[in-house]
Length: 206
Image (cartoon, rainbow, N blue to C red; front, side):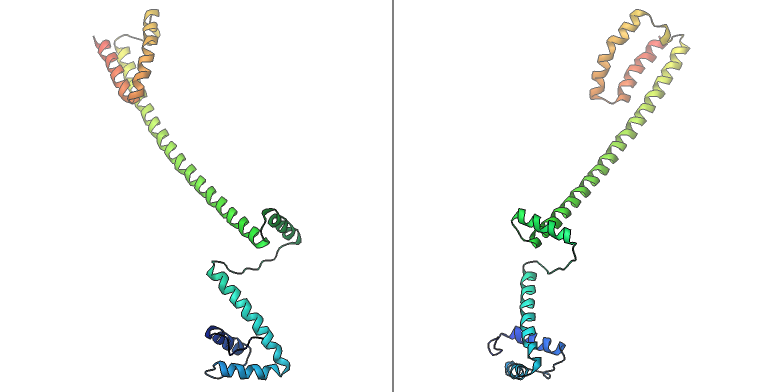
C-alpha cells in the first residue's frame, strides 16, 4: 500500500477530491498528515477496501493522463463476438494489438473518405470546365451557322448554288479542306470562317 507521506502534491489533491466524491470530507484543507491519519482510520474499518479502490482509481487516472499527453484517449465500444474475433485476427496478422488494429482501420477509413471527397471535388471542377468549353463551342457553332446562312443568301442572290458545283470545283473544295484544318489549329473557328466566307462573298459579288 502506498504511504501517503511519500506521494506528491498532485496525488494529494487528487486523493482529497476522490474521498470527497465518496462522501468523506477532510475539512476545508487537508495535507499529508491528515491523509495519513485517514488512511490509518480507514484501514481499521470494513470500508478499508476504499483505499484499495482509490489506489486502483489513481493508477487509472495516471494511465489516462499519460495517454492524453500522447494524444490518446480511452474509448469503450460494444462489438459483436464475430467482429471482435475478426479484429483480433487482423491485429495478429498486423503484429499489433486489437486497439492498434482498430485505430489503423479508423485512420485508413478516414483517409479513404478524404480521398473520395477530393475525387468528387475534382470531378465537379472538371465537369464545370467541360460545361464551360461546351457552351463556348455551342456559341461558336451558332456563329458559324449564321455566317454560312449569310453566305448561302449571297450565293443564291448571285445565282450560285453548292448543288451546282462542277467536278473541278468539288476537287478544289476537297483540296482546300486540309488547309482549313491547319488554320483551325492556330485560330478560332469563327476567325477562319470569317476569312474563308469573306473571300466567298467577294467572289460572289464579282
